[in-house]
Structures are given as structure tokens and as C-alpha cells.
Length: 224
Ligand SMILES: [Zn+2]
Image 1 (cartoon, rainbow, N blue to C red):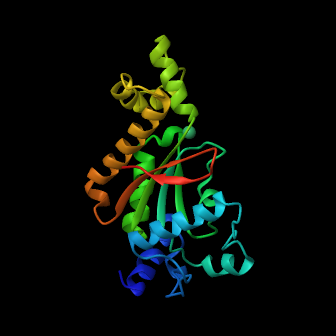
Image 2 (spheres, rainbow, N blue to C red):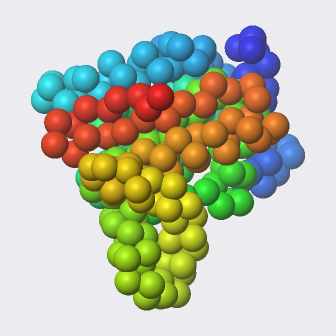
Image 3 (tube, rainbow, N blue to C red):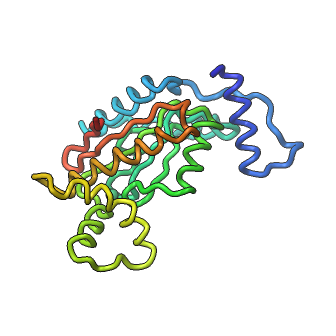
């Protein structure tokens, strides 16, 4: 997408979301440099940042006052990340990113709902983001809660029921496999979320991938 087109969409979308007065609509503004505008470049940038993070050599980019001022009028993130709320997996840190780099949707177990899908759609359609990455992680608490529910049959309390209901199909599909049931479930569920986003006609303009974060090494690996 041409940069002018992106700038226009960005400005109009931001205006719509913030309900700014029509008279305050901004003119074209320079967008931050270095944003990746293809899915391949976006994925490469994420994985390169993750390698820096895992190696203990993060750059902590894009967190300066200058960057903040540059982004004040418009944003141009290069990826949408659908990840878990887990406090050990904050996308901006594990991918060594900063302000304006990615849109993050985080729910326990990266469970989808309409609010998440609407947010992804905003990124893909309004901001022209080329990549959606679904990020699961090992030893996920939402997966563990789902397995406990399936083992005991005890009902999930309150709002947790939605999380269990969404993750349970992956747990049932992988229950007979040898090895770590939680790991199998996390991988199957994360791939299912990826496939659900891929299959949605709202997201055909974006490449959708899935990945696993390793809590021990800090490394992200793509899922098949
Ligand atoms: Zn989790």
C-alpha cells in the first residue's frame, strides 16, 4: 500500500476512533521510518528482536521522547500480535520493540472473542498491517486450568468458563497423544486460533502465523 494511502487510512481511522472534531482532522504527517511493510519483513523484524531479547542483548528501541512525538499524530505498526496475558510474555519486551511497532491483543490463552477480532480487523484493514502473529507459550495458566477442568469435571467459575470452552477442543484432540498434554494443547490451540483468523475473510490481506514462546530460553519459534 502506498505510504500516502496508509497515512490517509491511519489518519481517518484514528480520527474515527477518537471521535476528534472534524475541524481537527490532521493533514498528511510523516510516518515513522523503519516500519516493515511486508509480512516477510515484519516477521523477520519480530524474530530478530526476539533473538536479541533471548540473548540478553535487547536494544529497547523506539522508546525515546522523539519517537513519542513522531507518533503523536499517527501510527504505522507493522504487526498485530494476538498473545496471552501472562506476565512473562509481554510482546514488546520479548520481541525487543517500542512505541508504535505492534498492536497487541492479549487474552488468557490468546482466546478469541468479538472484541479481539474487531481489534485485529482494525489493525489489518484500517492500518494496513501485513502480519498477524498468534503467540502461545509453554506452561500457560489458561491451558492448565482447562486441563484441570477436563480431568476433574469441575465447572469453571464465572467468566473463566469462556476460556475453558475455547481451549477445551484442542485439549480433547490431543489427550491421547504421548508426552506433555499441556504442551500439545497449547500448540493445537494456538494453531487453531491462527487458522480461525486465516479463514476469516476480514483478514485476507494479511499473512497469519502462529508461534510458541519458550519461557526457559526466551526464544520464539514458529509453529507448523
Ligand atoms: Zn498463557
